Structures are given as C-alpha cells and as structure tokens.
Length: 387
Image (cartoon, rainbow, N blue to C red):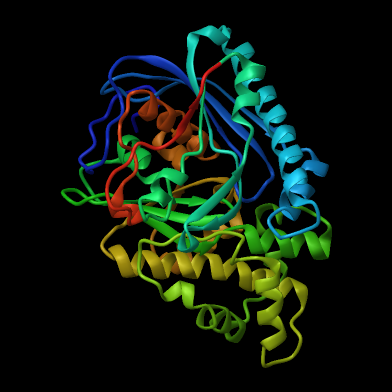
C-alpha cells in the first residue's frame, strides 16, 4: 500500500486542504493519557502528502505527570501550580523540538512554525470554555521558532465543541474513494468518518484509555495495562458493562459532542461501582469490563453514525494495546488495523495533525469544521506567538 507520508494521494472526502507552498513544520502533542510528548518534523506542500523528516517521543516526567493529572480537578493554589506546570511542560516540548532538529539535521530558522496543542485540563464547551496548559511564548523563546497554539478556543467561541480537531486532517491524509473510519485512542476516543461525497464527520465516543489507566495505576501501581495483559486475566461483567453505559446520559447524545476527564474520571467510575447491584467485582474483572466499555461504546457510535463503513484504522496509544484491538474487532465485527497499515505510524498521527493545523493557520485556512464541532461556521484555529 502507498505510503501517504511520502506519496501524494487525492482525497474524495470533503474538508479543508491547507497548503499553498512547501515548508517545514513541527507538531507536538501530549494527550489525555499524559504519558509523554510526541513530536514530528514534517514538510508540507500544496496538494502533496506530508513528508516526514523526523519523529520523537519523550516520556512525561513522573512528577509533572502527577501534577498535570491533579490539575484536572480543583485544588489549592491551582492558578500558580498551573502556570508552573505549563512552563515545565513546555520545557519537555523544547527538548522534543531540539531532538527533532538534531535528528533531521535542520536548523531552527528553516522551520516555519510549531503547532503545540498543550495539555487539556478542562473542557467545558457547554459552559463556553476549554483550558489547555501551555506556555507558547516560552516555547517560542526556547526554540527560536514561531509557535501556533490555542487551537480549540476559536471554535468554542463560535458555539462549537472545540473538539475533535483532527477530522479535517484525517480527511486530507486518509481520505479515499470508499468509506473509512479513523479511530483515535488516547485517553478519550474520537472517530472520524470519511465517506465519499459526504461531509467529513467526527466526534468523541467516550473513554479510551483514561479509565483503564487510572484503574491499573490504582491497583498495580503501573501507568497502563501493557497489551491488555491484566485485563486478559479477568472476565467481562455484562451487568456492570450495561450499568456503566446506561447510567451515563452522555453516551446517548447525538453528535456533535466531545468530552474529557471532566466527565470520565476515577470519581465517575467509583460512583458507578458503588451503585453496582452485585457482588464486589475483582479488580481484574473491572479492568476487563472497562476495556470492553471502550470497545463497545466505539462500536455503538460507529454503528449509529455510519454502519456501512467497513474499514477501521486506529491511531493513538490504544493502537498498541493488543487486547483492546482484539476487543474492538470483536465489538465492531470487522477487521481493525493500526494506521501503520496506511503508512502513518499510529503514535505519530496526532502530532502530525498539529503540524498540519499550524500550516493551516499560517495560510489562514479555516480548518475548523462546523459539521464536526457544531460551530456556527468554519473558523481559522490557533493563535500566533512569534519567535
């Protein structure tokens, strides 16, 4: 199969096509799993597929990871703590940028812009706001490169969800002449539906790794369940699964919709376990059930929105979880493949998307899709911090 990172391929899915001249961009991403920072250095050009020059993945320092997770909840002195955490996060970003430039042998002045999403700690479009911890001015100072950040808030200001942001990018790089779903499994799961002759659609489906990771951390002291091995020692509790789905009205909402740790937190899980009408479940059975919850809610969402789609490609950290991928194939009743099969490593897709969004911003292309977010119209996403 052709490699879309190096070979141009026309897309029949309708979405913005940010291009107009070649240039180097860096994309940085730290997602809701808070496990690390992914970065890419890529050449983007008009009507051509992205050409990857370098990629990097840095682990999140454990003390910073704990603080970022803590800042998802209200706490003492959180304004000062958030500012300090933003600075610390950006220093990891700067390390990623330095690694990319060194590996590619590219000087900083050759890069047009860095797209840096920041770390989402609040996402309440229903209340008109979204908060990403970031210090883009500091990143511009540390790297000597223009930084484009704050991608969500313009869409939220226009009445949209501000998420997911990646469907227009998925359309540009993965769109084909037949139906396809692209599923991103970070802390939260979101899906992009690409169907010929139809507008690009996309929305969050619910938790991906966020609940499984939290439960694994609590009981095993590990940040995640590698390959779903712990979940494989348990059994899915059908009654608990049905309760988890039935007790949460968000699952029944029609798109556009988005969510985050504001809703799907360990508190959410603890409340439902306390209501569970049955014997106290074993921790490994809860883990197996949470893995099935992710797969079942993804399958329900795709079935409701685009039952005819047969190709499902997965990106994000969840694509590396063999147990979760088996659950998805079981619940979807169709093959599920990582985006590596399309020539784009699953772990690099979101970072690449933010390089693409930075490119769109620098060319004043409206990359926000109202069909996806529910905004009043397409908007240019981002804010510029010159070096």
